[in-house]
Length: 126
Image 1 (tube, helix red, strand yellow):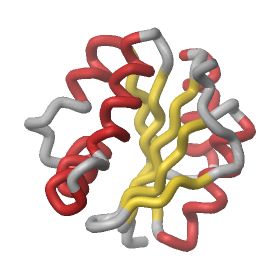
Image 2 (tube, rainbow, N blue to C red; image 1 turned 180 degrees about the vertical axis):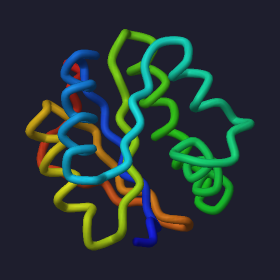
Image 3 (cartoon, rainbow, N blue to C red; image 1 turned 180 degrees about the horizontal axis):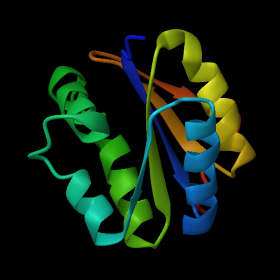
Image 4 (cartoon, one colour; image 1 turned 45 degrees about the horizontal axis):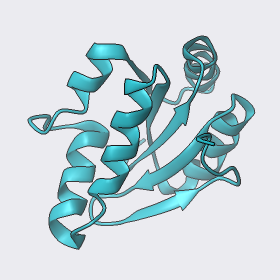
C-alpha cells in the first residue's frame, strides 16, 4: 500500500501516546512516537523524511505553515508527545479517529504540497 500523506497529532500524555501508537500498529498503520529530546531532534530541519520534511516543504511553498512545526516543537518542550503516521488519503480519517480516541489534538494531514487540519478537537493548550 502506498503511503502518500502523514498525519500528525499532539497527545499531552506520553503513556497515552504509546497506547495510540500500539492501537495504530494493531491496525497496521506505521506510527512514530516523538517525545523529549529525541523527538525534538526528529523534527530538526535536517530531516529528509517524515513530518519535519513535509512541513519544511510546505513552509517553502506557502510561507507561514512553519507554525505547525512551532506548535509541534512547543508540545515536545512541555513534555507532550507527537504521533506521526504515514497514511493513504483513504486512511487519514480512520487514523484521525484512533488518535482522537487517545486524546490526540492539533491534528494535521500533511501531503507533499498541501496540509489540512483534521479531527474535531481543538488545541489542548488552555
